[in-house]
Length: 436
Ligand code: ATP
Ligand code: MG
Image (tube, rainbow, N blue to C red):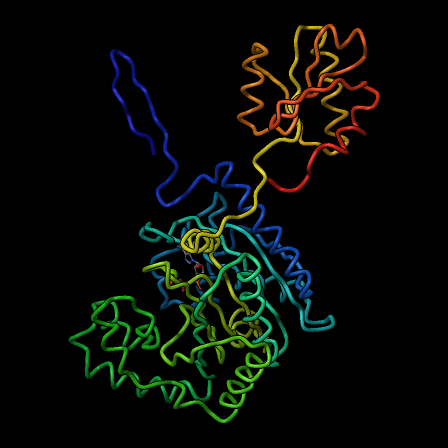
């Protein structure tokens, strides 16, 4: 979209980014890089490997893998026909693609479990607000082909440890089991009866969902629905023996890892393929959109999209929400905005020498900058100041003649002459390479 601004006799077009999308500008982008780096390191430490699936998939994958009666499939997908007449959808989440890829590439023939993670943009047509966008970013993990409850605890702890590494505190872990194919239907019947008795108090959307997918009602954020939901029958009281054992083992393993949690029997995930463990990690400081990450077991998904009975568990974390949470908790991400060195040039001949020096210093690992606007020496020094340069290296005719450079410590103002031959070695001793 663009706005038209009429100015005297001229048509000025002003383009805006689409609603619900964001530019991630520097220095903000450094925070993203930092989070991504911590993620790569930590996930690698847990032996999860990165998987990169396409940004778009055939629409049917999400219809089948997420479920027809979900907010995502009903109203939030960016779906279009490509020039070959195929229905394509920008991915609204990552799990369906990972399982599609696992099946398509016959990974199940290899040693299991397979442990993956991804980081990237997701697309949902939602009402943009704080912590809710149309293009947003998730980092997520999926552990496929094991039903071990210890893996459920590993997945939850992995997310928690990541947030801890970034400095976040006081997060609430909500934990539930949503049962399985054999115990859930009985619970769903009970829930239906209860919801029908309170139909008048539910929003229109939920009224309609009682028949089609009553579990979804528990996920509704509408206030009057919430007060009905509070007293609804609890799935934890209807689990079969197997699901009960699984749930209590997950809790035992979390206890071993000393991770506190709250059993929340009304927690259901927004997607249909979940079985057993469901969890959400919330930061109270965030307000309405307080879930930083959520996930659960999806033992029914591979069956749904590939006719194979392969269990899996994972979580997805919203990076924008993570950043909001860091902000709310006053946590500064250590990003280096400053440069190590700034080369100040006096005269044309010195510029050539300086340009060569720039390359040498950068190769030696110094973050180095030079003037590209033909500025005066004074303005170059101001520029160096703005970039928080630790040292400026001043090169002019005089220095060239003696094959030296004047270096200036920008904090103390002290200057010193150094032979160009020794410059790299000297700077290695002087420059403090810690993140500033
Ligand atoms: P919510 O209940 O907040 O809509 P959800 O159940 O739709 O979340 P998931 O599909 O499980 O969320 O996605 C996992 C995480 O991705 C969420 O916990 C949240 O941090 C983030 N997320 C989901 N939708 C958005 C969005 N539109 N904008 C920003 N972050 C999002
Ligand atoms: Mg949602």
